[in-house]
Amino acid sequence: MKKKLLSMALAASLAATMVCGTTVFAEESGNPITLTVWAPFTGSDGDVLREIVSTYNDTNTDNITVELDIMDNDTLQSKLPTAVSTGTGPSFVLVGIEYVHQYAENGLIEDISDFWETEGIDESNYYENVVSKSYVGESLYGVPMQYNVQYLYYNKDIFEAAGLDPDSPPATLEELKEAAIACTDADNNQYGLGLPYDYGAYPVYLWANGGDVISTDGTENLLNSQENNDTLTWLQELVITEGVSPQGLTAVDADTMFQAGQLAMYTSGPWNINGLTELGVNYGITAIPAGSDGAYSAEGGCSYMLIAGADDATRAAVYDFMAYWISDSTLKEWSTRNGFPVWSYSLLEDEDIQSNEILSSVSAATEIGRDWHLNLTFGSQIDNDVMQPMMEKILSGSDVTESLQEASDILDGIIAE
Image (cartoon, rainbow, N blue to C red):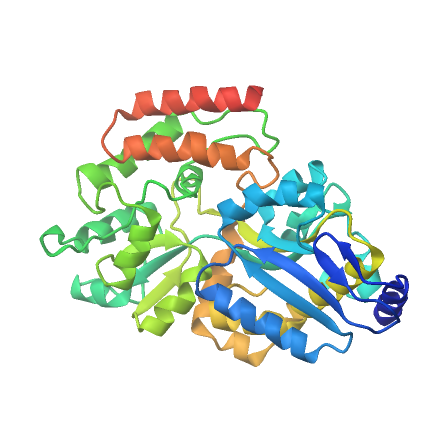
């Protein structure tokens, strides 16, 4: 059915037309069609993405060419609304799943609920919790490209030198504290735990001890609680009193220090796996340690989304590429080269996947994923205006209770807008 739809769509136009910035050559059925996709993959994973797109261009039999335009996320987000409204945007985008609801509500992307049937793909072969992140209500607005949670990275060499078992990373927050202190040697610029103020997933620590930031529906402010106060005080003491992390640390700094062997542990997503492996760092990955309420990790991921206003030819061609991406062969390449967890049941049976130590660790850590404002249109505002300023103050030694109250007041204003 896919090929029939594509051929019919390509034959529907008798001349080259511009649709959402995409030149569609369709003088007759089977003539070329060129798609553009915007993506914020500026790291080493962007190089892998380019290679996979290039392979698709060389091997697909439908005369489809995908042109990949990589830019930083801030640029993409600022350009996209105007580009869509003026018809100068891409054919489709590859962005974080936190934008699905916002884009759908603002009319930037198309409902693609017919994708599974059109492409003849069994939706149940993919993790329901992954696919569901691209739905708004009962309507599908994206096809998952990758899924991830946050993980604890640790340097096995530093662990061993500190007298710790490199094969037994911390499983609880108390063990995390003990290991961080043991691995800290500030005189030699070595620290036990990176705690950057601009880290976007501090709720993992709040959740671990029974706290939270906001209700799932975005209507209730949960930030100013005793549980959160206690956890934030604990984090502040790690930095200010115990000195396990440099003050004023940024997420970029933490990446650099871990790569250089100056940081024993820090939390991040799987996008650093490829680079660390290439650098030869002797590292391990494990789940975020548990607190008094358990272990949780902030979910994330990206999806391909069809830009609003797409004609039938563009829709059919984009569907073809989306189907190519979620094939086991493509997902396998992406996971094995970048370390992202597998979310296809059929791919999980692959022997190479089962024998990969890093992927096994990542997949196990994925089980504790939890939604962090993914369905809220003001989710990024919570990160930028509430959490980051609050953590910057607290991790620099400001009064925790006052900083928490200030942040909570700002969150009240965001909810009320």
